[in-house]
Length: 372
Image (cartoon, rainbow, N blue to C red; front, side):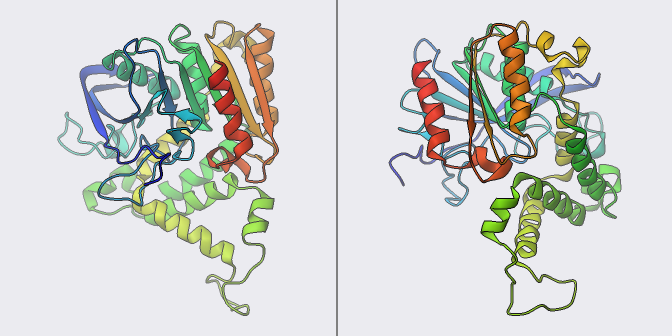
């Protein structure tokens, strides 16, 4: 095990018996949340950092499981002894969002009213709901204020929402590869992905568990569509180009190019490990996120009362959440006189750059936290 790894980790479950009212108007009569922690919470309980996950991730942020050493946390390159989120200094928490499929209450959970899995009856859960649940987890752990809340992509939207919902419970928001709301193009990509799932013959209006099937073909296509948007054209060209899988063209509709093989592999792997109902709901949460909606579309007004300081990071090759979208957030914060640091990193990886072990990117986070 590398010396900078948090090592063997164990997921935990936190159960809440109270009914929670959601932004959609729906209610859940009790729920549970899966989470993991790394490092030690100090006596003052002021060294905690919350990591918010993106669309297809989970609470498993760092380390490995004893029974599956290949299952490495999705942000393991950022978290551990001596890493930017140094677990010798910080107590790091990863929470699986409500509606997820990795231990938190979600569509595959049992509905106490019916005794069957929720399936298509599970309500839409928004970013604001996730933040409220994360705050409940923090309450149980005795954490009154986070030293930082950090996330990339959809996780960054949660970090931003934290500063809005709980301005006095957060010292630093680290917002990476984000947008203050989705563009029409991004919503369109999400809708095509959802259509792939809901038109799959096995979808059964979300109640596919009852038939012991999954809408695998639809979920595969949804993942392939999404994965294309996470990579830049340069990254695809460098990794695959027009390289053939075999020596010559096959003149058929099977796999001819390596990029086709890669996308099919990603789709197959995802369909085996992720729940289609969860995918549908998370993409809707992405679509609906818009802090400025209640302020006549003015982000400056939406961020007028945010708390804490900010680090905003974007990547030049990210065409899904381009740097111009981060500029919108930075400008709104500056217009309100907030303390904000901005970094735009020249990286070729596209939207997935926030997951990469880029030394420039990691050093920015490291220095920011050291100075904070």
